[in-house]
Length: 143
Image (cartoon, rainbow, N blue to C red; front, side, top):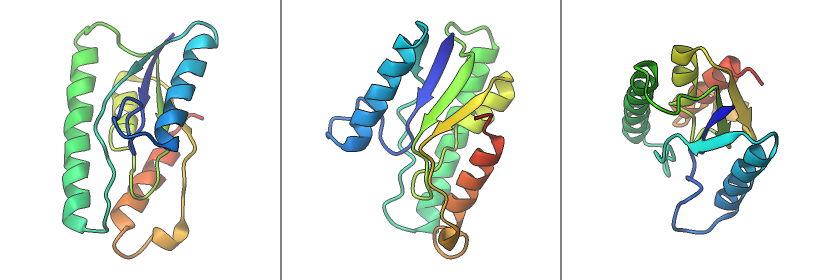
């Protein structure tokens, strides 16, 4: 099975070490070893918004939608390596997944999420945009 892997907070090959980077690497390895799946990093786009700036969040969302459209078109057009499953690791209100749900829907493949954070206290205020994106992603998740 071809698995498209995405970590909106920080890609697993990011130059700055962190627990998130390590966990993403370990998940990719585990998915690859479990049944011999082929795991490919789908995107390096960081969806992390350091501050609650609505303008910043909107720009990240726009970049994510553009990336989702590019990936979906590439794979829909018979691009090599089209995934059978999309896997997103660690989405939360500061780093929602703007890519996976759209690509999974376009390709009609399962969308899987691991380690999502959903905080109702972020439903209003400066983080509402990110919170709502996480809510939509979790609603779209197959698992």
